[in-house]
Image (cartoon, rainbow, N blue to C red):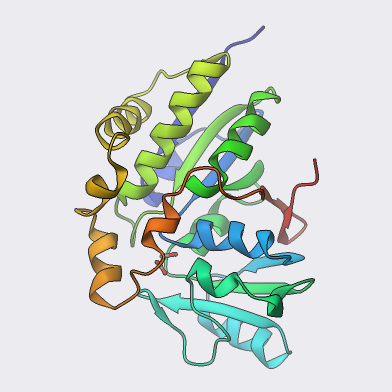
Length: 241
Ligand code: MLT
């Protein structure tokens, strides 16, 4: 059986240099917090999530009566129904509804990836279901890390390392690029005490400094979500197994 490649794009501006013209699943990750929040929205019954890049677009959706969640710089947008904390998705208010989400980096990353190849959302909370699903498929895998304003976010890189490790251990996956080795090696440094390791991350400190630290621990809980969001026809939907 053909060996599959797992690649990691550590920052959004590098995405253009990765080949996407082959059978490939793109896993978009923004551990803190957009991809965790999206998985949580589906865990709590959201029907669809529409990621929008521009605040103006989110305002339009809000005016049409949609439930809109969003932040800039981590801080909830004034007009929005919720910010970007996964805890704000743990509500009956979103059950059966479409959630519109706009965030500083995560929704931009999704917009960049969607339509190119099969695009799914990854986070530590859905790592187990994501990994098991990928193991049953045949495409190569590219993890697109959302990071922070075109720079690296280590929380996304260690997620990519964790996914690469489990795919290589349990499946016929090959790590053959420096970006993937970097992610894998950093995950080795992080995995035995994740909470200690993440305390130095820029975005961890940023969230703490704006009083948005209540969900950080949750964002690094492995496998607690049963949702695999995938891009389908203009929105994210929960994959039905
Ligand atoms: C983002 O998309 O940039 C992040 O999710 C920001 C945040 O933590 O709210």
